[in-house]
Image (cartoon, rainbow, N blue to C red):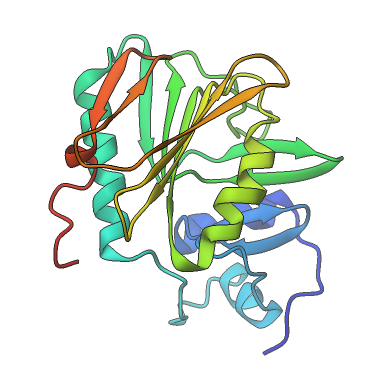
Length: 213
């Protein structure tokens, strides 16, 4: 198979996600695997657009990846007032424009205000907190590409990168429009405090039930 040379519309992207699930992101006309950022081949995209029902190899997250994401989502849903906030895992579609390019990202976990702001295509533009769990294939995407893109979201206050192969979190917090702080949290005794929503997450809670995965 050859790498895609075709530019696709956001309508194409929505159709593919509706048919095959949230395994994809949109990068200025290209459709990429969510977990490694690689461009998908035209042959696969054509079959997905035609909804042919074929089996394809998906760049899936590991069981540990899903466990960590679910741990974070459950803790936040239990801790936050549903009248003020919404919590998502592997959604929603977040719309970003950076350097004139349109991108759609799907965070592993996201917190938004209860009153969401959507584009005319129903993509979210006002997240408050985003978590990404790092896979071996997504290191550059999470630490460089998404960090740069997420900082362009005016409403975003915190971005947390969670390693899955060691107890390590990197917490980015907005100080001003152009300034962010960076804090590494590395031991099981530490906790992650989210000042935007006044919630404390113990590291042990984030990595619960991950042994053996």
